[in-house]
Length: 158
Image (cartoon, rainbow, N blue to C red; front, side, top):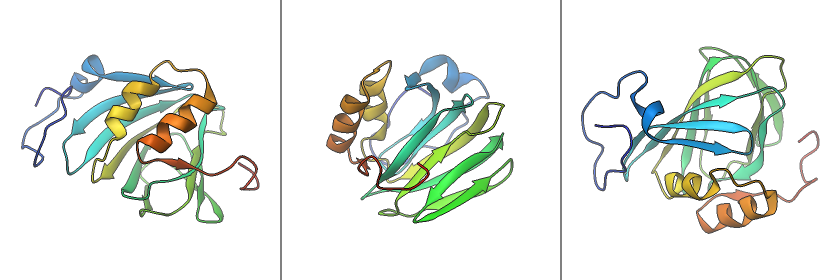
C-alpha cells in the first residue's frame, strides 16, 4: 500500500512505513495537520499533529465509529456530556451518534492516531477542507460529508 490512495472494497494487507503516508497525503485543517495512513471503504486512519490551542468543536458522526490512540501530549475531550482527558497510550472510543470534541489545551503539541469505521467520506472531506480558513464553510462542507457540528454555545466549555 502506498499510503496515499483510497481503496475501494476491503482493506488490503500491507505495511505503511513510518513516514510513507506523511510524504504522500497531508491535510492542513484549521491549524491541525492530518497525515493519511490507510483508507478503504471499511476504515480510514490518519495521524494528527495538533499544536497547543487547537481543537475540533463538538460534532457527531451519524454513520461512523471513531477511535483515537494518543501518542504524545494530552487531549481534553468532550464525550457525550462529560469532559475527560486522555494522554499517551490511552485509547478513546466514540461510537456513532455520540457528541464529541477534542482540544489540545496543553503547552506542547499532541499527536494521535485516529481511525473511523466505516470510512464514509472523511478522506474526501479532508481534501476539501485542506487550507480552508472559513469556519462556516468547514461546517457546511462537513455536514455534506457525514459530520454534523453542534451549534456554537451548545456545549459548556467548548
